Length: 241
Image 1 (cartoon, rainbow, N blue to C red):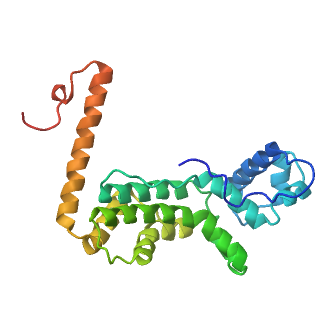
Image 2: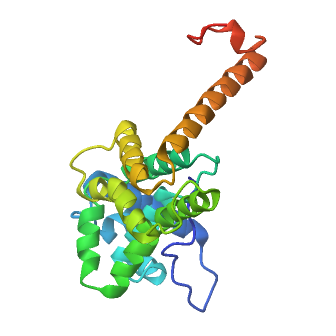
Image 3: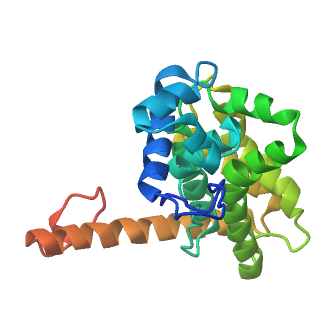
């Protein structure tokens, strides 16, 4: 996932050009303070001190502390890219694994308190969702739409409900942080959901296993090529022949 630059952008006002180095220093300092102190002890004074700037300079760019924190978290979250491997199970599992990993890079004790701080203000709450939750949701929607077009998923699929079900795997533990989400749990959750929304789940599962095996052999062949081996037959894959 690549750093995002379009979420919770600094406010642009008329006058002299904005110093982008200050923007970067402030966002870096914001993440450092959040990493060390969480949201409850976050102060703009400490951010300004670490960034070598002033509170007025910060407020000229981000009018509230919530917007500043959202901008910093968006950088760490990165771009939400939807995998496209022609394997529905693979794409959904990989996409959610990537998003879980991204949310696990969030500073501890931040997302829940930040959401609570934004909840009473409709505009801030909308910005919270748009900045942190909508990008991965959009990427998963693309994966589901492609799967419907391939005939893997039912045409009458309720996309928004399915997105809510898949998103809960990521967001519930990201917000409350009470337990990590493992790759095995993600794969089980995706497989469980696909059993209800796939056109032909056994065929979909067979395709994903065939593709995984093909990818494994291709990677082994690539390793052999780069190391001077002649391919996978020089390595023990646990297969006969």
